[in-house]
Length: 140
Image (tube, rainbow, N blue to C red; front, side):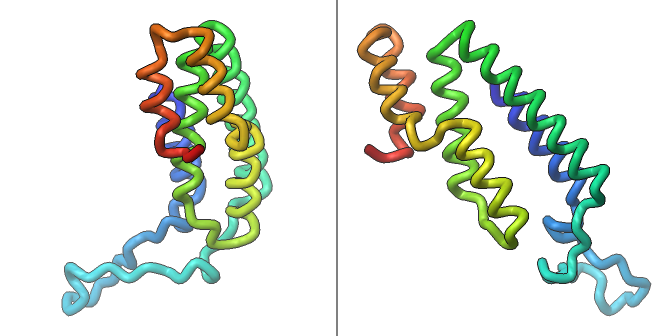
C-alpha cells in the first residue's frame, strides 16, 4: 500500500529534483560542506513531456489505488487517509504545486475520508481500530 505512494513520490521527485533543491557543486574548496539551494522562483519547471508523463503515472496509480480499495475497503480508506495526511502537510510553493495538491485532495476524496472511515467502522467493527488509527489525524 505505502510502496505505491512511495514509488509515485520517487518518480515525482526525480522529475522535479531541482524543485526540491539541489546542492550547488562548486570547485571552490571554501564552500565545501555548505550546500546552496536555488530559490523556488528560479527553479526550472518540468518540461511538457515530463508533466504529461507524471500525469499518466498519477492516473495509473489512482486507478490501481481504486482497484485495491474495491478489493479491500479498509485498506482503501487507510491508503486514502495516508495520502491526505501527506498532501495536507505539503507546501504549495507555486501555483502548479497548489494545483497538484488540490488535485490529490480531489482524487482521494480527502473531504470525505473521515466520514467514509466512520461508515466503514460501523460495517466492519473488527477493523475499527485500524480505521480509527488511520483517520485520527484528519480531524472530525
